[in-house]
Length: 199
Image (cartoon, rainbow, N blue to C red; front, top):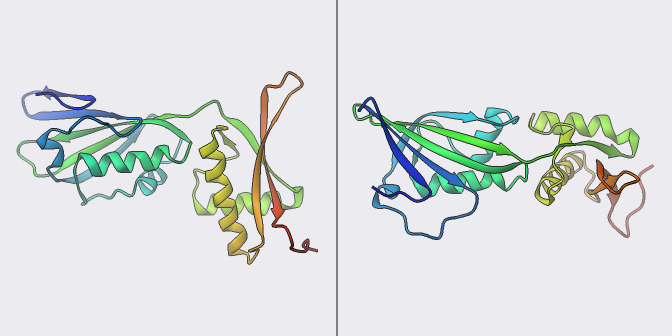
């Protein structure tokens, strides 16, 4: 049986594991089995520095949910859209004597990671605390992908708005060393034009 970007392995004649790799949406047609719904009994996350609960939340998946290949593929693209993850491989563990399946997500993180800071200095600790409370995946190190910078900037803007600071936003820049190599990511809190500076 041929499967898009994947293979089926039979273990001990009782367990079938199907693996897929998600980088971009596939253009080829899907096999009929890909449209069949299966209930998720467990979700495993491997190969990433990101917290498991954060990955599952971003994916929009949940134990007890009925999924098929299209649903899981879409969920994996939500993970890579953060810019923190390069690729996601996913696999089902299906047992003939059980109705559900175990879904395993294997991530390859984006890298390298660069230290990040928030300016002005007085804003840094309160905003990092806000980010951490929103989701522990917001660490003070991140890759310099455009999507990752935008993902952090959007989260910082939500923190600002939650504090009633509607006229402010976070602008991300990547600072380099004397040789022009990326060294640090800076998120500068700025005001939209035409607004007064905060006291």
